Length: 91
Image (tube, rainbow, N blue to C red; front, side, top):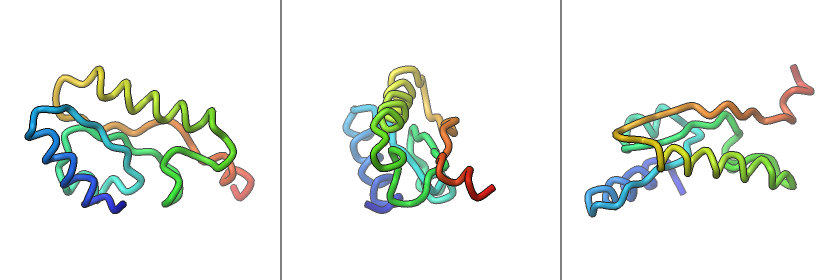
């Protein structure tokens, strides 16, 4: 699903009274849609929860997103500290 669509759906859900948080791979788009809460992770497109066959990475990202939702008192946009490990071999 595209970042703009997620932002629009997130806004509608927020207006109905339910807090939301989204995960972004393209912060410039997510920020432009003005979502209430979002976390940015530096992963390639199509892999918002991490590398294939690494479920522990996905659990960490999902847990951080839930923490953002639980702890935020207002609009917030954070960058998560997780990195795509496979890129390290190219550095």
